[in-house]
Image 1 (cartoon, helix red, strand yellow):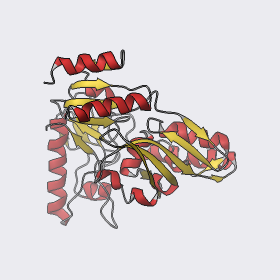
Image 2 (tube, rainbow, N blue to C red):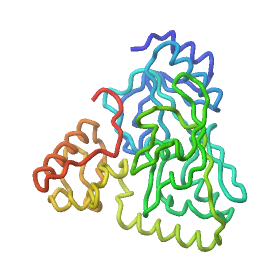
Image 3 (tube, helix red, strand yellow):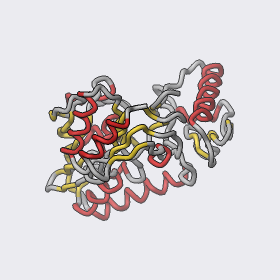
Image 4 (cartoon, rainbow, N blue to C red):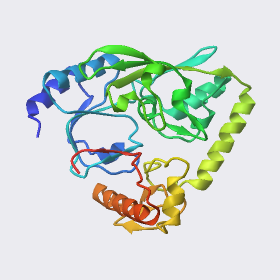
Length: 303
């Protein structure tokens, strides 16, 4: 365990924003995860820089999360400092041809702001949970589009506590990936390019995407979205369903009966349950069709 002195020092630096032993299941869409040793919710980018610099100079493990929508946190929790980006780092500003949004801004809020401003481009994000930071790190996408397609520039914070920028080209966006997966840094804000579009057309398209999402995804149970990346030219969900795995269950973790590339928490699922189910899925699909499914969700902590 981290010495209580570190907790006390951070608490003195940021009163009211630091907790000890915070359960991560309260901060993940799967509602799974053990305690964090130190949990910090900074109220702005200077707070964030301070805690990142603190962790670096004291060589403490640092984990940064957003809405917790694409992660599986170990039942044993997370060692070191966990920083949650959200309130205080979530400003959204619309302009005549684009949007600037901070890392903790929810995609749903950005899509709504774009619609109100008559800016097209974010329609595909309708119903996608998560925040800007995580979406950029994994180049979140749906309906044939990805967030990286809209990026002009990204402001970042290094793990040493220094601010810097990257252009869209430097971000290295690809299918469910970006340069941040090889060169870790923390997203501060991003500037997005948008085209002018009729507000009613934007609304209509967003409603269509939302309707499709509700019809095809198990939104009534906690989940982390798609578990596996789609193999080239195929769909992970199709392969899992073809293997007869819909409804397969380990503990309270179950392959969704609505969408086979979702694992839902029926109530008391643990990270161990989910990992065991992931193992069964990968083994079966590999044996049936020779395809090795690759995880889209990120595993955090000592499993």
